[in-house]
Each structure stands twice: as C-alpha cells, then as structure tokens.
Length: 490
Figure (tube, rainbow, N blue to C red):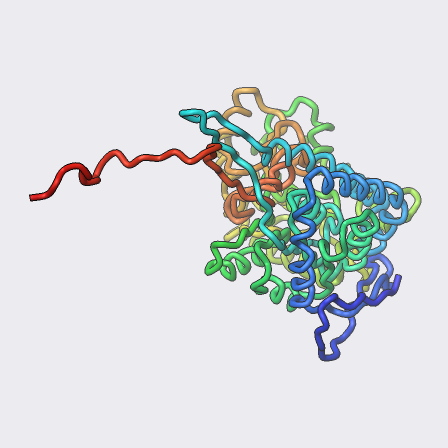
C-alpha cells in the first residue's frame, strides 16, 4: 500500500521533506510510503474538533466506539495481514493483536463506568456532593512498533470515550498500521478532527510532545525515550503524562514438579514476538545444582522453534525483529554479555545476513562481571543460578526496572513471599511474564513507568475528577469574627 497523507485542516506551508518508507522486515520490500506531517497543524485540527466531540453524551461516544469495533472486526483478515507484513510477526500472532483491538472497546467501556463513573453523596442540611469527570482536551499518543495497533489503541479508545480528541503518531517503523487504525476510527463515525494521524520519526514525535496545544501525552516505548519525555514535561505539571516503558523481567523457576510445563512457560515468556515485548522474560533464575533438567528441557524446545517469515506454512513461532538496526543492537548486547563472562548455551545467530532474523538464544550469566541492567529487546534469555529462594528474590529485584515477574513452581508460602517482596507491577504464579490481561491494570515501577498504569486503569489518566458541593438554594452565615451591628463602638 502506497498512500500520501491528506493535508491537515490547517493551511500550513511546509518545506519539502523526504518521504517516510516502511519495509517488510522479512523480505525487505516496501510496504508503505508517505510524507511526514506537521505536528502544529494536526494539534490545531484536533483542538478545533474537540469541543464538539466532548459535547456529545458519553452514550453517543460509546456507541461510536462500538461501531469502530465492528469495523475492525469486518477487516480482521486485511488488518492482520498488514501488521504481519509491516512487523514481520507471524500471521497467527497478528490475528490475536487485531482481536485485542476489538476487545479493547468493551473493556474500556466497563473501565470508564467503574473508574470514572458519576457519584452523588448526601451531605449535611440536604446538600449534595457530586463527583464527575471531565476530559483533558487534546491528548497526544506516541505508539510503539511491537504492537502497532493494540498498544496505541489501548490509549486512544479510552481517551475518546472520555471525550478527548487525539493526535496519534505511530512508530516510524509501522506507519501503515497506524494509518489503517485511524481510518477504522473515521469509518466508524469518529470525526476526522477527533483522531488525527501524524506521520513522522523522532523529530515529529519531539515536536508533538512540545506542542503547547496538547493537554497531555500517552507514551509506550523505551525507558530512555520515557526519561527524555519526563524531563521535557518537568516544567508542564498541568499536562498529564502517562509512560508505559520496558523491563528487565525475572522468571524464577523453583522446585517445579512439571518440568515440561515450566520450560514451555520460560520459552513463551522469553521468545514470543521474537522477544520484542516489554513483559518478556529477560532473566531465568534457577536453583544452582538443581537447574540442569529444566535447562535441558528449555534447550530442547529452543531447538524446535521455527523462525521464519510471517506467512510461512507451517507457521513460525518467531518472525524477525523489526529491522536490521534492531538486530545489530541485540547482537551487540549479546557479544557484550559474552565479553563479560557469559557462557552461551544456545547461540544468537543471524539466519540471513541481510535480514533481521535472529535465533532464540540462551546464555548463563551467573559468573558474568558487571552484568548490565538493560532491556535486551530481542530473543535473548539470561540464566542466573542462585543458592536459595531468598537469593532468587534478591536477583529478581536486581534491576532498576519493575514491570513483570513470575514464579514457576514453589509453595503457596513461597509465592506469598515472592509477591510481597518482588518489586514489579505485574507478578504472576505459574504463568508467563507476558500476556497480561486487558481487564486489569498494567504498568510497572522504577524505570518501567511513572505510576500511570494502563489497560483497565487507562480511564484514570484520560479524565480528571471534579468534586462539586451542591445546594438548590444559597444559604450561608458567618458566625465568628464579625462586629455586632447593634453595638456601638466607644
């Protein structure tokens, strides 16, 4: 699909800029091309459209979003194919992403009612106290490339239900998916001004974040980019900033009775989406001396994993990472682990020299020196052997991040200990680190976010509460501190 963006409603002159092109990472073929947009023009268009959208009853906005879900459902095959072509993820996984886009609507409707519903309370003397919510205004959404439809949609849908207008800049690596998503909103009846598409790279993202006409920014991406945005917004405390960042997530396996199941959970946690999930397990923490059976089972599964292009038959478990630069970065981080003393158990290999296909890798870093606390955004799982369960908890917390953590095996008492002491926003038992439910809050602590959890709690940052004390007629008297009008002063 090759398509140029429509001009913004604002008549703004622009200098010629190079077109933005997205490519299929599995084949290198062009998927889409378009012209980078103008952030000021898109914000102006959203600002102009916002009052009318916000003035609609919430029931009207909800029904419009229900139509959006139906539009996406009708285009499921086309949408999933586009996501697979632009990201390289297997078609089966792209289909689950489109399903998540559809399901987000009802989840957001339920969340709006529960998290931001109206409340009326009785007060003294027949007065009332009302708690209601208002939209912020125009919200900017910066989307990632790993889930280019589902994750920005998780911001956009609750923002629209609350009555905000949105300016959405998809990742420069997945603009076609972003454009398709916005067209679905418009086809469903969301006004074009209420959801604006800004195409571009980092320059356009920075410019959008700096626009005085936005009332907040909702971001999903790397911790480094999140810290930069946090600094940029330091002098704008009146603007909402919700950051959903990465993780260096631990998966602790302890006295697991079903080794095959434990190995499968480890592989799912580490290698789904080619390791390009913020919740992917990065560290496999095991008991030293009792670890070999598990590692043998993990390696046996790794050896069976199919890495291939998204439409292959049989379907692969993993596709490529997003592009050659991302593959180079993961390989550099892998080499750094080896230079620091890590011992490869399954090597990270480049299957095709000029394509970003990486094999799933396993490396024992127990003896590594100065092990970096970084998010390796690719298919690399680090093994850390520890002496006892307390040491396993210490290792789980050996990170500045705090997104996801899982315990596989263990007793109920050990899980209680794990839950109470591990610092993370998502803590699971006998479940993978990834695949968090959308009907619950999602977010982390430390470098993983700024205490603005998304998913079900996205409603919290899409509207602000207004408390009103109300009476049908004014009644007031000042009882202290006034002179007696009937008493003359000397």
